Image (cartoon, rainbow, N blue to C red; front, top):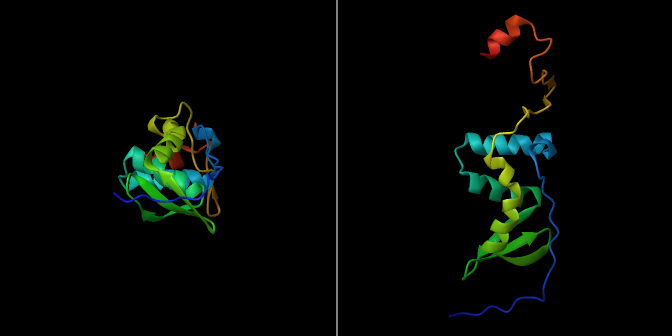
Length: 127
């Protein structure tokens, strides 16, 4: 069995949204894209955790550890640490109570979630 000597305990500060309404347009686009590509919920949460906190897996180590790059600083995280942090995104497993949509795509702004003031012709196209 190989043993690794790691640097002294490092602190990694991450920020994650805690509800659907906390997601920015860019975050929503990533979540919708990943779900559309048939990633599992666990994979979506893990990929979002890594992407939103600018973390990259540099290498897979033994014993369920990963050598990560955060900017120029390398650090080691366990699979347990990653899954625990990703559990903050458990709200992605459920459908939000109110419609959550991207507010703008390119130069096009979203219509009201309840289709208020949307002409019937445009509403009909959405069906």
